[in-house]
Image 1 (cartoon, rainbow, N blue to C red):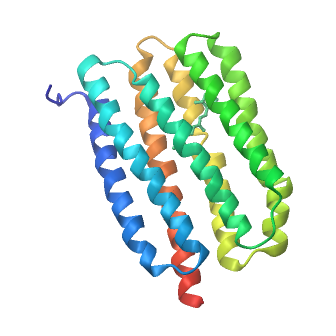
Image 2 (cartoon, rainbow, N blue to C red):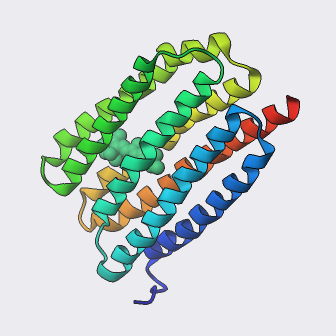
Length: 227
Ligand SMILES: *C/C=C(C)/C=C/C=C(C)/C=C/C1=C(C)CCCC1(C)C
């Protein structure tokens, strides 16, 4: 089926598919410019956009052909890429200090709670707003942990200038960038909500997967040039 000119949500699915492929290529090639542990960080950034690219090809098909939310593809993508981004956070901290594995698991479990309850709510397996509230609690816990908890203390006490810049930028992404997602979920509750929900989720993925990788790329290449 062709993409209709007035299907603006479908167009965003296309643009983001292309952007995810381009970003994957970029982070992979730029890996050569990074040294040491930063190489792994760029590899993970490329994995996130690469996994998303594949899901975007399929999600676009569902949307263009049916006009419905590609619910399962969407959440499978998130369930793969959000944990990778949590790993990315942890790698940045682990590059500068000895970090307890418990911190990693706290962030990981909170992100899974956030996603699983979002999925149950959108699927209709659970009431929409209680599921949303539990998902929000998972996200707020992550924010607490990276601003007031152990993660922020490690970064402040041990970080280099580049790692602290990366940590602070990633923290902003998780707070401000991730805040776009609940807006999509809220729009999804309204009449004809699928368009608003997908438009906002697409925008959010564009920011949070590509900008997230770019932040890591900036830190990786700047600290490699100084090394
Ligand atoms: C690459 C994909 C990313 C970074 C996805 C992030 C998704 C979220 C931050 C979702 C958040 C949600 C809540 C905070 C409440 C419940 C509904 C969700 C799942 C949309």
